[in-house]
Image (cartoon, rainbow, N blue to C red; front, side, top):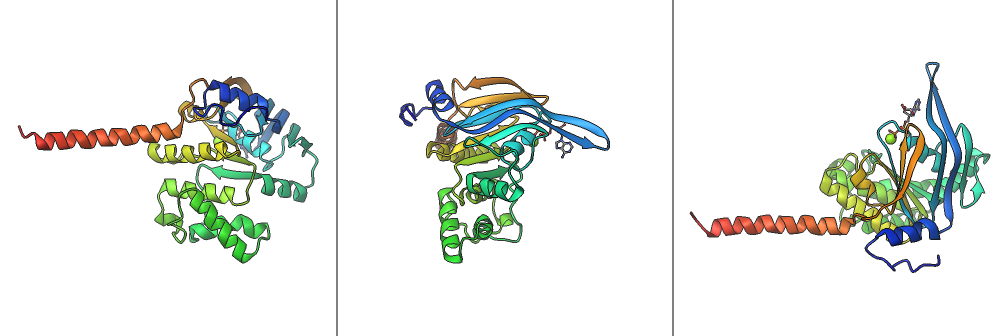
Length: 281
Ligand code: ADP
Ligand code: MG
């Protein structure tokens, strides 16, 4: 990249432009359409979508429910095939790749985070995070070490042996992020990652995603929520299976500042409370 990554730590429009135009294209969809046939009814979920994701950027794909966001994410994440059009990853056309080769590319380069966490229920956080490494054939000792490290990275170093039902929603989503990270992907795709969370936990998850992005990981989040989208540097709006707008975020929301704000509010409440207690009527 031609620009200093830290030139604009506030994440304003300038840094968005840097990331959105400076990096090479890591993921690309060209004229992608996707049709589903269900009970002889054809649904055109995507219609001629072009999308470019630059290396190192944080991008949001935003649109109302049913607009085709998840379909698009599954296609650029190599979980599904387009009906027509091409997908390239790191400049390589993957449209005609054999399933095994495709799975290898996906497992190596892309980490997924879903709205509903998708953790195995009667399985510890540690083992959940180890699973992708089992599939990748990584041996026992290294697996344990790397899963632990990934959980520490999302602030769950003290919860390694907890089962999902012993963790809050926000913590479960952090386990899912650790699971996405453990294979050291260069891209993280997150589909409505805050959709099942209270607002505080949602901000904490956005902070982790912003931190990962600041560390160089390309992050794409799918959301119907304009506020969540404004945590990204750039927003691609989709409606009825088409891209309708591509905008740089002018006043990006930094989760760090939101968390500070929330803490300040709590302190205010505590102060008001103590003043009221100290000053009997
Ligand atoms: P979003 O994530 O924006 O809510 P989706 O990509 O899930 O939207 O869905 C886009 C459209 O495609 C919707 O009309 C949905 O009903 C339809 N759709 C998605 N997946 C399937 C499927 N497997 N079979 C049939 N229709 C589907
Ligand atoms: Mg969806």
